[in-house]
Structure formats: structure tokens, C-alpha cells
Length: 114
Image (cartoon, rainbow, N blue to C red; front, side, top):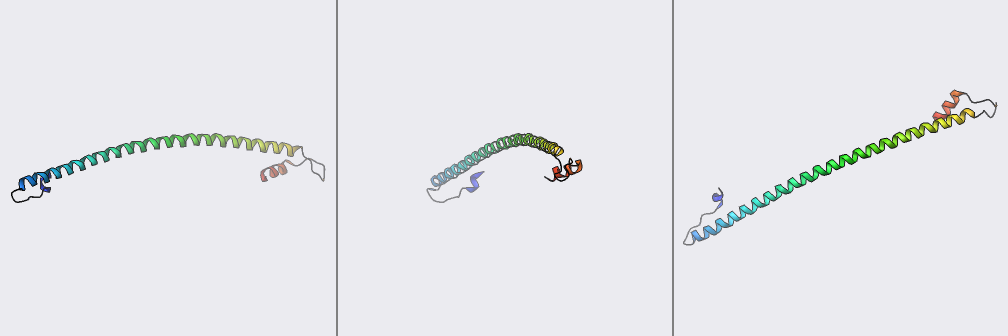
């Protein structure tokens, strides 16, 4: 199949020179096929490595999301406790002018504004 690539020469040394040229071309083609095969193998290895790295990244993302959700839940709980504490303190407070306890609607408004 590669014989079409081999140039035809004339003269007394044509057969000898042609054989050398044919060997050169066949060697070149063989070298190219080997390089192509190595490139395909390297590509397969890189695709497998990429798949492995993607899988690891997805697992890490999932783990980090879980950690984030736990921390967010903790923050939400602490925020709720803070506002409950603040509301409890405000319920015990008295108006400095009148000496009366603060109204619940005022307390809620104060707590929410902070």
C-alpha cells in the first residue's frame, strides 16, 4: 500500500537504490505508526487521569458542601439563640422615662432592626 510513495529511479543502481529508498520509506512509515500508537496510548492514559481527577474533585466538592451546610445550620442555630437571648433581655428592660416594661411589639421591632 505504501509502494505508491516510493519514487521510481532509473539506471544501473536503480534496484539497489530503490530498495534502500523503499526501506527508508517503510522505516519512516513504521516510525510514524509507532509514534501514532504511542500518542493514542498517551491520550487514553490522559483521559483516564482526567476522569479520575474529575471524580476526586466531585467527591471533594460534595464533602465541602456537606461541611458548609453543617456550618450554615450551626450559624442559623446560633443566630436564633442570639435573638432569643436579646429578646429575653429586652423583655426584662424598662423604659427609662416611664419606668414601665417595654411593649412586646417594640421589643420585636428593636430585635429585628439589629
